[in-house]
Image (cartoon, rainbow, N blue to C red; front, side):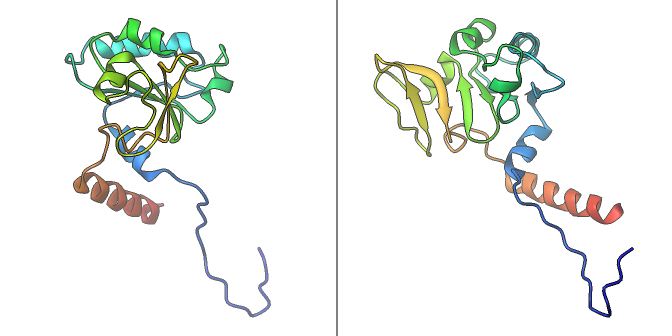
Length: 169
């Protein structure tokens, strides 16, 4: 207990850094490859391959990692474009390493109109190109370019359930 010395004390909430949009998007329909439950690229690829088994061809597949998964995974890296191509040749795949970096497969690059020499994404972000100008599958700040935008109903559900959960505690 603290004696405030007769001064008014008002409870406050401080949340210095959140990603509510990503939280909303992850609620339904993302492969969960977050560390520590998923400790390796190898296991992430197994989980993605399993997800693909019940996903229609051509449908986007989103995979959630955590910021700096490339440092936390046993392999000390993220999945590569080639590895994603192998487990998901018929679906565009986005492996989100937090909110600012993702790795995609070749089909996702094609659907985003990223080709040799093209590094600017429609809607924001950049594709990383190798020394020959080929996209290597890494995208930065690209969430505005991929089709993941929550609907207004998604936002309402998220914020209403969040407020209800807060006041119920």
